[in-house]
Amino acid sequence: MAIIRGRQMGLEMPTLTKQFKTSKSVIGATLNTPNLSKATGRPLKTSSGDDRIIVRMNKKKPRLTSTDINSELKDQYGVQISVQGHCQKTSAPCETLQKASSEQANDSGEEPFSWTEVGKGSSALGWNKVLWSDESKYLMIGTDGVTHVRRPGDKRNDLKYQVPTVKHGGGNVMMWGFFHANGVGSLIRITGTMESYMYKDILEKEMIPSGRSQMGLGWFFQQDNDPKHSSHFFKDWIAQHRVNVMTWPRQSPNLNLFEHL
Image 1 (tube, rainbow, N blue to C red):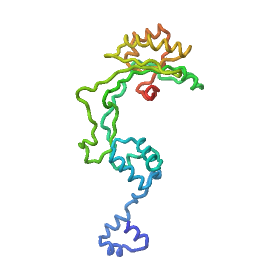
Image 2 (cartoon, rainbow, N blue to C red):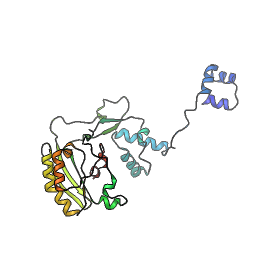
Image 3 (tube, one colour):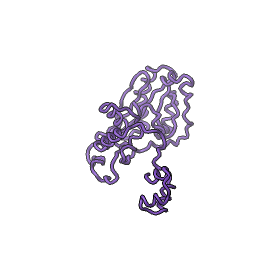
């Protein structure tokens, strides 16, 4: 930068060479180098002091999420900024320690999801007619989801930045439940592997009575594309009981409101 400023002040090449005790080729290369210090992208929303606070927080608690960082900045320091970009402030990579398994794809050949099924142009009224369902596994200890950690590049094997696991014990519980605009339905514990016959019994005893008593006529039943939901046995049972089932897009767990309940 000093060479560039000297040139901008009108100093000649021999003067710069003598002053900085280097060759003309080095001076020329410096002057022809693009200015990489010029900021690009969105303007910074944090000061250098805010950046130091963020780095200090992440060194102390490397598993803090962006939302946690933003909350602590607001509560403890009175600083309110966007939750985006905190990872860049820490000068440490955000590493995924565990990967969540993806939902199994649907090969049933069903038609794509259509929003018109629940009332085009009247979304609030239409969604009130949907009964949402899902089954989920809950671990007794820890999580099998995605866990992120911010760590220095040379601290990969440091126990502070690793996720502990349970080799024996722990266990999990498989639950099935549903809810609708009028309230939350039953929560059923699943013992063993849920098959089509077990699923049919749950819907027959829990889902259908609740849907017909709480939602009246013209309601829709939502379920994901699990293979047991698309079996011929289950499709025949659905047709016999005249249950309106929403078609559901493949690989789309985030669309299910049950995931955010």
